[in-house]
Image 1 (cartoon, rainbow, N blue to C red):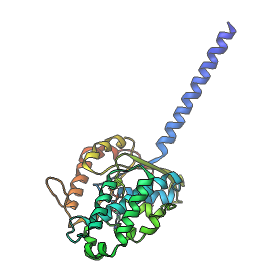
Image 2: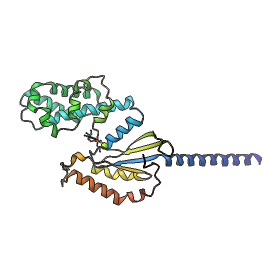
Image 3: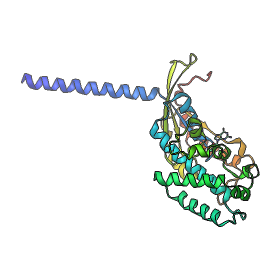
Image 4: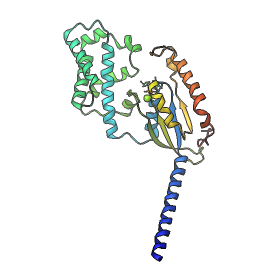
Length: 276
Ligand SMILES: Nc1nc2c(ncn2[C@@H]2O[C@H](COP(=O)(O)OP(=O)(O)O)[C@@H](O)[C@H]2O)c(=O)[nH]1
Ligand SMILES: [Mg+2]
């Protein structure tokens, strides 16, 4: 009989311990400041996330740099193809063949040999005088190119080296389409904050219309939303079916978010001091 009592009280103790642990996890979770980055596509959300990671989070691992390397190399391939696109000046047979080969390579990814061949071909084209004459100077075409074009074209021989590993700056400037929810963790200390060293989780979501339904998944438990808008797009329009000024699109998105889900977020207890 005493054995049964002993086993039961042991069970109760274990159960209480588990409850205490769960409570402490919930407390810990609630004490983490959760920030959600929102904004239209290409507004700079992922760039902010990467900058916060570099400033306050864990350094990028070798595995992450290898993944970024693929993106950097294909960014350059895309820049070269963008330069060549629709250009009547590409009359030379070898240039046409090379750009067509690059187009095919740009579609297939996931193989390091192909990746190295693609970047070498991109470098070959960029170093070719006839190619440069045909596509014009970078300054002439700058407005139509991706923002990171000049930076990466100047680094093409470094990036095409088989031993190349991206620097933090390469990772910041490299464009990668965000298709899933990403989270970074970091700690920030400030004498002005109530608990000095505060833990943060920052979430990044895809900004394209197709990704917006995923935002809803991360709204729960969020303490702050950082809405990012790219001011330099004041003279650009969206390229969907009903084109709209990009700043107008950002403002509409912002007011849409305010109306829909943020009402209850505003009643959450803020952990951050606004004096900081
Ligand atoms: N000039 C400038 N370019 C930026 C800034 N932030 C981001 N970009 C560029 O804008 C493009 C889109 O940025 P990204 O962070 O991917 O936007 P997201 O789609 O909102 O995640 C990239 O080429 C970035 O390098 C900024 O503050 N200034
Ligand atoms: Mg993004």
